[in-house]
Structures are given as C-alpha cells and as structure tokens.
Length: 64
Image (cartoon, rainbow, N blue to C red; front, side, top):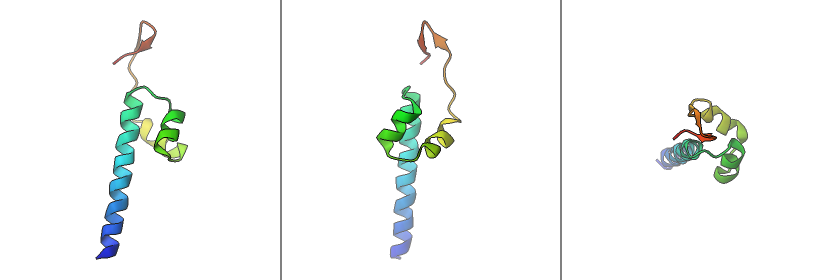
C-alpha cells in the first residue's frame, strides 16, 4: 500500500511541475528562466514548451 502512495505522490508532483512550466511559459518567461525556477532539466522544459503557441508580436511585445 505504501508503494502505491509513493508512486501517486511522484505523479502528482510531476503534474504540478508540468502545470507550473506551462503557466510560466504562457507568462512569457524564457525556457532558461523556467528551468531555474522549477528546478528541472532543460529537456523537460523543451518537451512541454514545444506545444505552447506563442502569440504574434504586436507593437514590440508578445500578444496576450
């Protein structure tokens, strides 16, 4: 029973980190900044961020 809770905890932690990566990406932070904040490997950030579409630039800034 204890092993099931441990695996479930790891899964929850991973999901929360992934959600944080997505939210920081949508907020406009660079992948390097996201990696430093979340504390994960740059490959994990890249793997998630490649699915997030960036807005078109309008008046010199990212579209919101």
